[in-house]
Amino acid sequence: MKKWLPKVRVFTLFSFMALLLAGCGEPFVSALRPAGEVAKMQYDLMILATLIMVIVIAVVTLIFVIALVKFRRKKGEENKIPKQVEGNHTLEIIWTTIPILLLLVLAIPTVSATFKLADVKAMEQDEDALVVNVTANLYWWEFEYPGQGIVTAQELVVPTDEKVYFNLIASDVKHSFWIPAVGGKMDTNTDNVNKFWLEFNSEKTEEAGGLFYGKCAELCGPSHALMDFKVKPLPRAEFDQWVDKMVAAKDVEHVPANDLARAGEELFTTNGCIGCHAIDTGEKRPTAPSLANFGDRSSIAGILEFDEENLKKWLKDPETIKPGNLMTNTYDHKGLSDQDLDALAEYLMGLKIED
Image 1 (cartoon, helix red, strand yellow):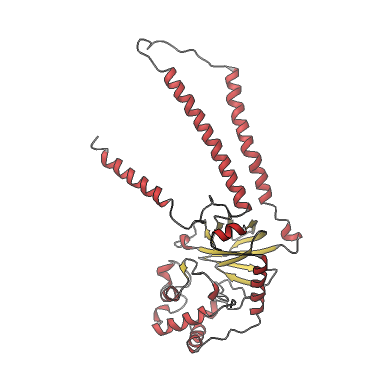
Image 2: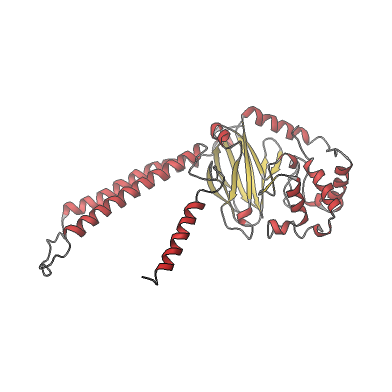
């Protein structure tokens, strides 16, 4: 008993920690809090499958206990052979029919939902359908709105209470696009385009504080767990206003707000940043995230809280924040002085389309 006691204590400790940690995190980074039509269908299927499994386990456990109690070997009856039921057609029919019925109960809604979720004909047939081209990169996301002619990165903006259609592809290795509270996941491959749709519920969006969290759900490298993005659903009128501002910004040259920002713009150009990052809302580049509306975003590098200090940390040493990122070796970040970081941060945080 004493040999097992330490192991029992360790097991109990880790079980308690797992239970405690299961309640941590943002409230809408979970498929168990559906915030859209797709997520609700998937959630209902999970509940149905879980209910069927619980019923089966309960019935099997009950039969096992009954058999254990009723047919246990009793003292004085060691040589008694219980009544045999081999070839009992009634029992065979029962335990064959019941699993078939349970499979049908699970299969019919699953197949129905699968076909419904795979229906993306509106992408080609409906001119008003909103289509977003998603490109997954190591370790960032690009969102292109081909019908509107605009491009952004790291923060997906969508209208609420309507279907949004997605073309998914990867530029380097396989990734997977997943917004846990809204639906998914679906792989992004390098050699073919996957298509699907999502719907973002306005009431749940309000409950979530106007922001959902997206992740890469396919192991893709050392910073896979840090390949996050944010989703900002807006009422259709506000979404249209956002689109109009993004479109209008294509024809307007950004003017730094002050001398410090102008110094940052010069550094941005001379340090080679402009060679990888687009600052035009209509420009698409395969090398690095667009920074056209960087100042309006809610995070730095998809994972850090949006503020000046975090931006400076990212510019100073991106490798410590996202190991393996492609930005680390593309410019002399270690040679940046504190004054350079101040100037770059001032310039980048001024890249806005919102007032």
